[in-house]
Image (cartoon, rainbow, N blue to C red; front, top):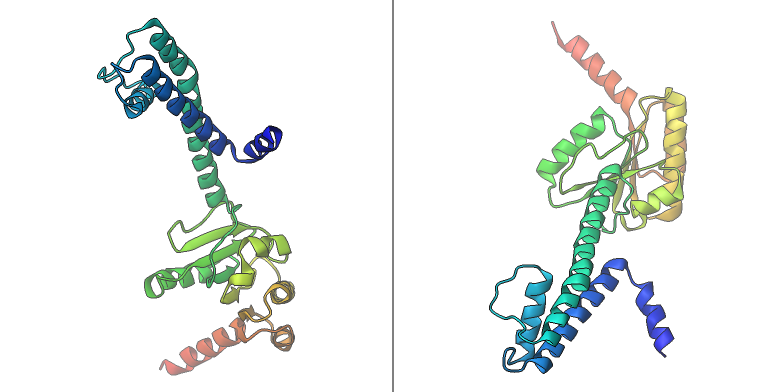
Length: 255
């Protein structure tokens, strides 16, 4: 029985174990000092208060052991208890810093649902998110990109996941299964045909995990528009066609 409890104890995180050990020292020392010096420490709570003050090295002086046995307990508490408390807060700080770094570097998994996913970082994506933060501030965006080294837009509503969006593990980090919509933007660093093929491959990977997600895909070449629809795209944005129409209208609308 004891071995099973010990095994379960060591399966918990180091923060949990350090907290349990520190509390054990505090409550045990508080009970013992109350038993040793009932006149000085009239209640167990007085003993626990003295234990906390001693471990924290605050030293208010409102309670202090008077017997040799009580002072020995104090010495043990200082030598062992302070070590565990210091280790606990050092470990807690390290975990917080590590999580903050992981958040910035895009290695943490997103746990929310009903969010929007955007694939690819470029100027169009940046402007889209800028508008999104103003108009749809209550929603969350998960940005997936493999070229960035850290989150490009640190704010409450934008979460960054680094990696290749054709990989299932990367899409799972973005919790694509719980997302409402996905926008796949074209890679500006690839030739148009290659960029379109990659976008369609990403769409296929996403639909394999979440077939019902509303998908919007940017396509550059007219030949791949049909293939994008066959792959399951709900909406296709033919960027070059849109820009050509704007250029034509602008050109002939000026005198």
